[in-house]
Image 1 (cartoon, helix red, strand yellow):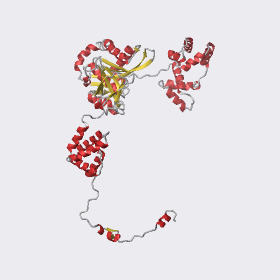
Image 2 (cartoon, helix red, strand yellow):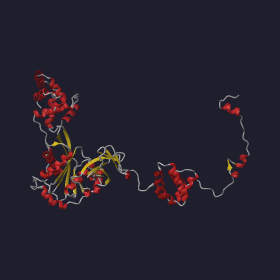
Image 3 (cartoon, helix red, strand yellow):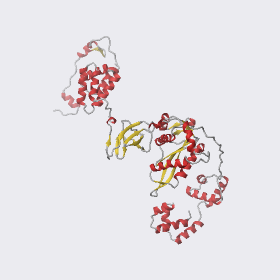
Image 4 (cartoon, one colour):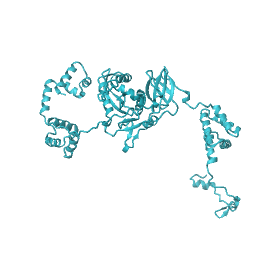
Length: 523
């Protein structure tokens, strides 16, 4: 931008009491530049601009060498020139200085980079219902308060009819977000195609691996639930899916450009309305047909999709939440319980479907309904389903009765369970559950014998019972018992019998001798 124009705008805005930050955002410069121009007078500006035109630059003495490089290699970048200068032992010149100098030289000498023209071949449209192309995009939009935010979009297009679907978020798409968008797209289309075409985005793919595509864990799981053929474009080759590339440009320029953002729900609603009017309702420039009318025929060739088991409606609100460490999900200042084991350290996310004051928590990958609660109007409460705490299907008395009748010696089992109840009242369910597991793995005969052994040893604990089972039935004997038992007196010890050893006399020391050895004081 012209320096005189910047100076004039800054002075005018300063008179209107704008701050440096507001002026910088208004005219697109940094605050340091605003502060510098604001302190200048008109005479100082004229002197400074005249000095800028006549002052020498660091690279002027290397001007001819850089010009020769650019004329020989028009595609040479400023970064490469900076590196070549360092090879010539030309130091203490920053890359930004080289970049500005090279840019000015290219403009002065009309040096333009040569471009290789890629030859394209027209590709016929695939059959109806054969293929959908998918891609992501992002767009900066202005809010009601004049702030600028970035929105992210995923779009789908049927390759034959050019029928489209899109979905926007206020954050970059994760694998769970993309999978949820697939489900919504298949609902919108009324089915799924045979083949899905993707760029090599990290949301879907880990590595191309020479044709053996490695998928992300979440997307690979989704493909098994919702099977379809995947076509991954080669890396850095967006032209191979030109239909969706054009759709992304069309959406950003025709729908999102100059549209004011209020909230993401209204934005997505306006996007669907725009698809009806323009994206799918307007004649396509290439096919010269209206995508919506062509798609009426193509819809019949789509395959049924599994995601429709949870159909969305205008009365259904769908949001996403991360499962907390205590197996709950926070929604509108309340915690809603989930079954134990739902939490994952990797950060598991669930979809929340709100319909008629009822919350349904759904796995975005498999579509499985994890839990369901009534919406609470309170704040700061834990809404808990008793089934989500422990296995309450079997009560304590029932578990105890089952254990007693499994064992042959009913009195021993009854006494053992009663002792456990007295010693572990708080953990009795855990104790009984462990004994039930031992009965399944070892059988009632062995568990009964182990209970008798524990009673003889006066140990009452399910873990002690487990150790006793291992000791009695799983620990092998190291030394088998000899077949012939010899009297202890006849067993030889160092060439002498035990009887001979017992007849030996042992020398006895006095107490004073031990005190002297230990450093004590004798009386």
